[in-house]
Length: 304
Length: 307
Image (cartoon, rainbow over all chains, first blue to last red; front, side, top):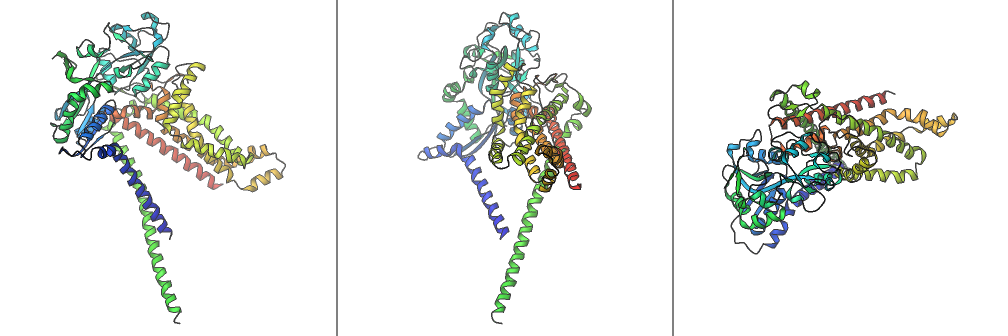
């Protein structure tokens, strides 16, 4: 009798887990399926697993949502785990698309020659300071001095008499790599508070006197932090597109070998004018199709 | 006779089916045990091989890894892999938080068992259980929003500090300590209390001289279990400690722990890279430490049985 009870308890537990797993997987596309049950014009079907950069996850997930709405038989899962995870998983073939905010060539242990790069968006970023610092423009050499700890008070740059507090990203972060390379000319920043999430970084800069960090353009939606112009060049979409503002990076989607079938269809969809001109803007990215300059993995920039 | 036979048969049958159940139950329970043991062994082996790779494959010296204070794995020309600041940070927040939580938790336990066993327990028990149920990310978020600015304005420093991490952890391990300490105190035999009171000791004297010493091994176990939890906590600490790779020189300095460095970097690094391997090595250190904590608990509880 006792074993029977245990058995039933186990069964119930197992059933519950299966149920929850099913719910978790189905929640993202359940509604779309219902909405679009009537239009079965497209023959696209199957499932696609995407993983990688957490910064790209909202964009790709939103695009996937719309893509699934148009192709009800398609199931796309977008996981965030970080660029390193995405590149590793696509290289070993466990996902079809791996998102990354750095070139695969820059990451150690990734067979970059086997991966095909699809640049789906551009993200611009700049240094951001606490509004009370009172600075809106900074020379690049001063910015380097600030981040390497050679200047420690804002009054040396004509700002308020406040100690400079650095807010960094983790060593391996793509955002940090881009900022170090293009804003600090490769200098290694001094130690400071380190946070991974852009929202946390923004919150810290806003709350801490004299704080400076760096954020993507999409986080400058209110007055809580002040974005800095570098060498007099405003951090705007136009300046990034024309190549005047140096601190930007591609958002890459990598496939192992040329993209095929569903992966190709989805990547084409990401590059369509519809997504590039509307969804990207909503999410705070810049369309890669409008860039007037391009950059290779070594950071060399040239006009298109 | 006619009635007896079916009864006997029935008995035989039931015996058979109960033996059947006996067998099935045994298999099931053994299966559970085997599964648990093999999962633990598998994790240990996996973490062991992964964690040692940075020394065997990438040629980092173990001594440098454990004793150097320089951590700069992304520097291409001159990478440095010293995790001492993080080991120090982990131990610092663990011991400091135990220092805060242990008196509080044991005090609460004494209150619940000795001072106000009826109404005190009715109020405190659900409060403690509620503390267990709050997810660690919420603790971190409250710490980031309330504690960090408070320390910045009223104590000093940036707010992101060992102190913030310590306070958040102390609250998080408080329920563990309180619950186990309460069990320990209430399982003390009543004759200890009666004997002491009969000798003319006051209530406080009884608690201080008789009950706490008698329950000491279990109370220490409670503290160590709390410390084990503090040592492994990542998310909440990461949000308030500042994650700086320098050795902190004061309690108001920002710092980092093994767990926060792992969670910050794990997603960004690629499998098999040196950086990734060093993170696994840090995980191995965490595992070894938790083994040490368990050994300590075993030692303490074996001491209790001897008494």
